[in-house]
Image (cartoon, rainbow, N blue to C red; front, side):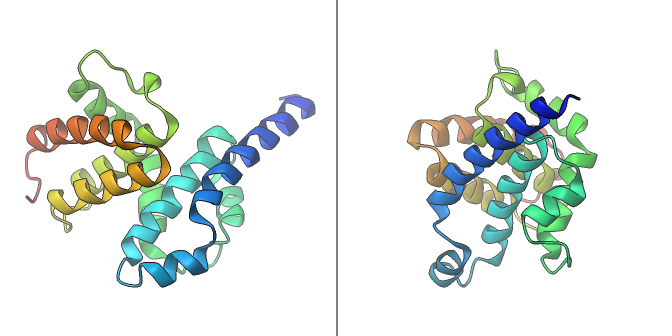
Length: 169
């Protein structure tokens, strides 16, 4: 890959991440306002990491450095992030099967990554009830996108919940 392309890709990704980071303000405020929601924080961190990984075309270690997560202190974040990368083909297949007339490539960046996080949790980490995963996904989409996107994500995830056998309601 030419250095100029890698540099401009990095600038684009950093600009996009700054936009979404600005919605978070900073992790300190997030943690203060949602003390009981460590998993929500991990899900949001996973969303930002997925942007860095897929849009910035970074490897896992570079993404961890960007997220200041090289020490592995947030185990849930690491499980989500690495699991989604490892199972992306299967996750996207589930999404495609349940998104009538939509392919994952047509989804917005926030929507596709939040749906991937939710599908991964429901399919591979079954300890969290599907209703909780669904609600968390909707709230994160509302925060980083808008109400219309939240309704879209809700409809896709409802179909996925109904299609995945063994999901804890």
